[in-house]
Amino acid sequence: MIIVILRRKFGGDPGRILSFALTGCESSTAAQSRICRAVADIAECAPGVSALFAHGNVIGLFLNSLDTGYGRLEAEALTNPDVIKLDYNEAAFRWDTQFRLAGLERIATAPFDAARL
Image (tube, rainbow, N blue to C red; front, top):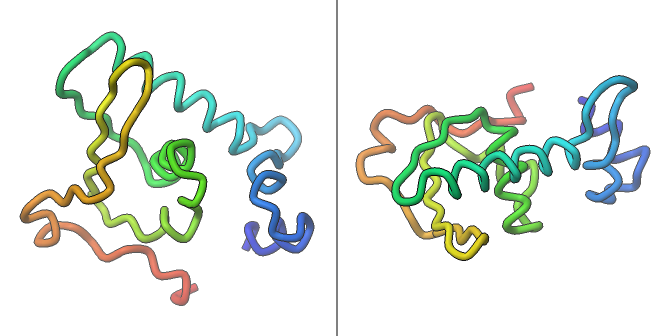
């Protein structure tokens, strides 16, 4: 419901929606910056194969930092669990959007369906 209110208030401008914060709360833009710094710090400190675990909104904000076309609807299409493959080289992430973990579909729940609300 909050996303509908924000879209009406900001005319669907993703930048303004992401920068909105309730008093005393963190905006999505601030959270995204914090998340990206933390993931980069982990990648720098633990080169090679690493695994990170997070809830969908954190993953969605991080992936949006790599591809601004990745938004709320794409984040809601994540399954639970989901596996995202990233490479980190020379202080930059590369997202392998074609990666699919074999067998994951057998254990993953269906993506969120906003129509159920």
